[in-house]
Image (cartoon, rainbow, N blue to C red; front, top):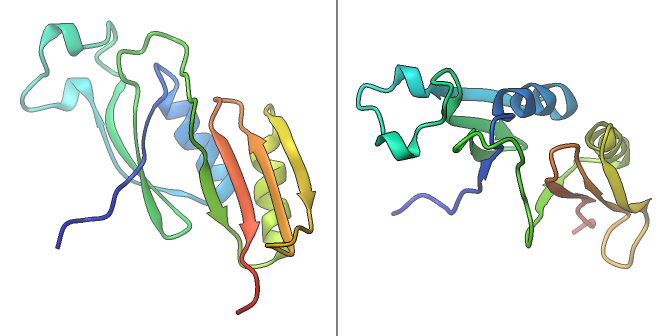
Length: 140
């Protein structure tokens, strides 16, 4: 059986800052981190950022899922469009904590509130430009 699809986010030079932010905001854990300078087989020169200390590959564990991350070419401006990450919370208090922490320096798209599909749901774009949908799953 193949592993599930995993999101892979390119922070264009801000990966380490983003990992630290998600550790604090979500209690995420960095399961793996490799810098370009650590690679036993360096990528082609045209795929290398100017600073070899940038993150080539990282794995972030958050809410039971893995999110992969990298600095990519470290061009300075990450662009995240056309998708969002759905983040389940165990209860309304946890949802509010996640939402408020992710919103620090970001933009609220839809304030937290009750919806027809969830007792607590909101949408926020964090300071890196990643859109999050924080949701408390409805009772079964």
